[in-house]
Amino acid sequence: MDIQKKKRLVHKSSINIHISRESKMLIDKLKVCLIVSLLLPGLFGISYAGNPTIAGEDAPSDSNSVQTAVPDSNATGVDAVEGVIPDPNDSNLPFEGAVDQNAAQEKPPKSPESGQTGTSLWITGKMIAFYIAVGLAAATIVAWFLLRRTLRTRLRMKKIMTEDPDIDDFLIIFDWTSKILYFPTMIASIVAANLMYLQEADLWLFSSINPKIIGSAWFLIFFLNFLVEEYNITIMATLMSVVSIGFLFLWLNLVGWVSGFLGLFKHFALSISATGYLLVSVIGLLTILISWVKGLFYYVTITPNYMNLQEGPTETGEQIGREDYNTRIDTSDFFGRLLGFGKIVITFKDRKRQPISLRVSSIKSKAQLLEKVRAKLVIDHSLKSAVRQPEPQKPI
Image (tube, one colour):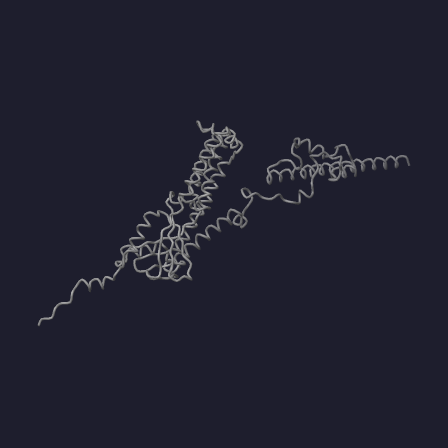
């Protein structure tokens, strides 16, 4: 019996040794699988986002993170198998070994430079803006080719009048916007913008310029332009204003308040950036450009025999005989006249029609040409030839 018991014990021990070896081999395989499973997310992180760590910014080396996740090699049995599966909710795990399941499921957005391919590249904001610009350019070209034969602009009318053999003198005018009187302010804005750019660049002597002095000078020019554009300042009103200011300073000098009065303006300081000055000039020039474009389709053509009122891009207009209207020149705006602008006023014999007032540039030359046109009466060339060539006398 003792021998049989010993045999059973030896057999059991051999079975236990065999089981322990199998379990050890299983544990080694699980270790290898665990190491591979931990290294794969890191490899994917490197190839996709360029970051070798899974979570965190200042993670230690990969060997430490692997050692913290792999259980002790001396562990056996079921405990060793359970130890190789880390619990993501376990707060005792090291930070490097924690895996965010939601972050692993959600892919980070691809940047346009690295991962944007296919149709998404053609629907970006810049591409949409490019499509709009190309569409507007194409529509403009198509509209020009379709309407160029029907358009009757001021420039085309001038060409027609020049080529007409029966008309030697004519005048084509349109109404400028009153904002064109702000032209000195626009020039001052461009100069002030350049000075501010030089001052900000700390270039030569311009670095010592006080921006408040530039702003105050610019505002003074703007204020004078505002008075000229808002009010019709005649030369008499200008002289009276100068005399009144002179008497004011004379009285202030008598009471000793001149320095105190001028000292009030020290507290007035206006500082505008170079971009602000440039924006003012761009808005003003855009307003003038719109007025010029409008004048291409709304203008007045005055000839010795008639006047044509154009009111649209095509031949829409009205022709009025020279006996049904009168013209006069208005240069009462003194400062506007200094800038070369004046008004040509057209009145009608029909009192029901309102007068037409057109602000024109180069008023001196246009006034002379208008007088020359109105003083003429054109006769057709066929009538001229008939008058010049007497009929031959019949022989008796």
